[in-house]
Each structure stands twice: as structure tokens, then as C-alpha cells.
Image (cartoon, rainbow, N blue to C red):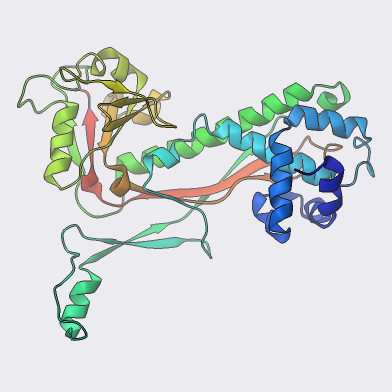
Length: 353
């Protein structure tokens, strides 16, 4: 672990770059030695944004030419606070097969093999035909393009907060901005998952028989329940492991109509519940993101390793941070993100009547 003065000494060049460009993202730390990156991370993890701000103010960083390294220290801890805030609503990692973060260029194209067309062949060692090689490479490919869209969020800070010692409020506003970004990112991913614009196959669908009610199970053979949606996915060779719903459907009837003998297990990190150790449940608080025609509530039942892929660039980058904490009133947070469905038949959309 490094002292704050040691961090300041080791990040002078990085601080100058941040001051010139007005941006910060952890990717910029790659210019530092790995041992220094680890030491800095250990120190910052033990500090809150509020306590760091208080140190900087007491050290004279509220005037231009104050503490050398103030830009880096403030920006790095602000980013940590944004990440902590975003985790409350950022469910993209929980509903995506993967969140891809590193690639060159703007758009990213991914190849999705049509279901049941990719296979391996049994051939003699060192003796496969050209046709065999083509078969071994796979079948028909569907191309999906991810075009990350830019999102920005203003962090509503004012210089009065610094001058009046409102350090806890600076931390709260920053964390709130992270929450907003996490929510917006999740809303975009949910819309992509639900609307299945790309990928292979056909989305399964179920309509409940009772108005305004989504049942987990009912009578054997019923075709209007969550269990039937799982059956449709299984018929397409995808085993359901995730259910994304909203509070109204979950508390109204779903939780009350579980199969006899079902057991709630400790949920995995990022999920709200787990049923029988097999089904991870996410109860999304914003029901308007899971509405069908005429505002009928919806639930998505899917296999998350095959349903959705998400791509991000510069997640929660801090911008307009030229002279922190002297000038913090125009700081914004930005990120770029897009998602694409992979196998449409790896999910079923359940809509209330």
C-alpha cells in the first residue's frame, strides 16, 4: 500500500495528462508499473471520496497550483465511487453471456452459427478433405453488429459543496450518477434482449390465460406459465437458467405459484433470488422496461449463455475534470454500449393477458 504522497509522486505525468485532456479512465493507469498500480489500488480502496476530498482541501488543493496530483486522486476515487453506485442497477453482466470491453475500432461484428449446423467430424489423423475441413469449421453463420451508443450523465456538483465542506454530499451525488448510468445501461440491454432484432432462431412466446397474472406453474400441461416457457426453450435445446421479471408479476402471483416442494436457495451475487439452485431470478424495479402492447407486463425466461452479448467501451469515463477539486461543476460521466441477441430461441417472452 502506498501513502498519498507516494501516489502523488508516482502519478505526476498521469496527472498532467488528465489536466490537459480533462478525462480519466482506469485504462490510463497502464502507463504505470504493475506494482505501483496495485499499491495505488490498495490505498484508494481504504478511502472514501469524502475523506479524500477533505485531505485535498486541507492540503491546499482548492486553489490552482495546490496539491500536485489532485486531478488524478480525485478522478480515480470518483471513478471508484461511480462503479460502486452503478452496481446497484447494472444487471448487464447478469443477463449477458459476456460483457466485452476490449476491441479496436468503433463497431464490433460477431459471428453466430445457426443452431444445429455446427459440428465436429470424425476424420483420420492428418487426412481430412477440404469438404471435411469446411464442415469442421461450422455451418451457416449469422453476423450480428454491435454499435456502441454514447451515453453521458452530468454529476450535479457545485463549488459551494467544496467550500462549505459538503464532502459527503459530493460522494452521494457521484454515487447517484453511477446509479443512473447503471440503470440506463441495463434498460438498453433489456430492450435488446426483449426485442430480438438480431441472431439466429425465433423467439418463443407465451401469453397468460388470466388477465394481469403471471404464474410460475399451475396444472400439468398448461401452456400459459413460466414453466411452459421453459419447456419451449428446452424444445429448442436451451435450458433456462435465468428469469427477468418486474416486481408486480413477481409478488402478485409468480412467487405464490411455485412448484410444490420448490426451495429458495441463497442467491448469487447480482441476483435477487434462486429457486432450486437452478433458476436465477432478477426482479427489475422499473416495470416500464418490461411492458408489451397496451402496457401488459412481461417476463423474459432465458438461457443467459446464449441469449445476449453486450459490448462496452470506457465504462464510466470521467470527463471535464481539468482542475479538480478547484473546478468540478461541469464534470460528466460517459460510456458507450450496445447489446445483441445471439440465439433468439434461447429465450421466451411471457406476456400477461
